[in-house]
Length: 284
Image 1 (cartoon, rainbow, N blue to C red):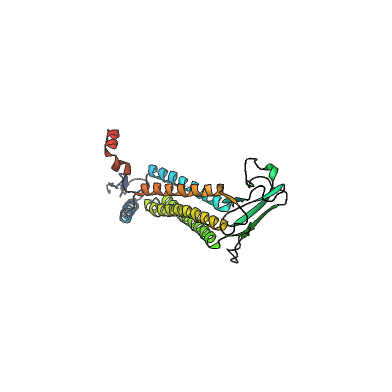
Image 2 (tube, helix red, strand yellow):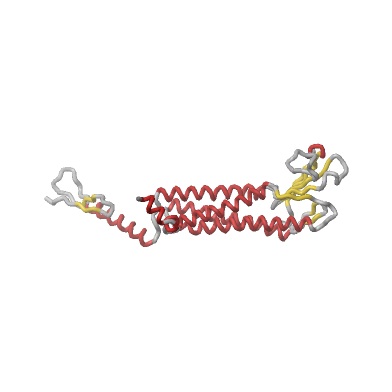
């Protein structure tokens, strides 16, 4: 008769290593128990060697909340980039001396013109517009900019766009979207692989993308000013529209999301470092 004995692994679980040969229906479990014990120890040693901290449920919830904030910024950015209401251009209502006037708006990729009835415009408004008003049937026209393909400048109201500034604004927007995708991939890997290290590159991607988004708005505004200054024969009133508001809000939200990921990636609680007395009083 062989006596039965057991060992305990690091988590306190009992692992059998042998059983009596005379016990009915009891097969030898020694090799399997030892293999499971050694496998568990090897996994823990590999995790310690990698230097990554285990992710608790509370930490996972905080990461998901910060990721939701970043996703809101990404959605706002996609909405702004995909629409053409970045700036609205409108001559005075009395410029054409008839019952209609022409308003225009454009974004990063294309420009649209619309013929409006003067009677539909607010009497207190001096310029034609806004572009959201219903226009004449068949009098709306949208054209994609050709300086992305053939390099031609776009002419509207006898004014010419500055293609270098427009292309720079578009490239900044595209690069910021690329960084958003990279940051989202890092957060997904952090949640799936249970590794907090990926929060650091994700925070860098989101903060840099937010800065590039705000820089894109600045460059686009400079392109609008250069467009208005190219010719002064047609007076135009211009105003930045709701697409720019979406993009600007996206930049601010992305920076906030990136800062949240930086705080979550720190090896200590910054609140306890800044206010140790309050934390100790709360704990007591």
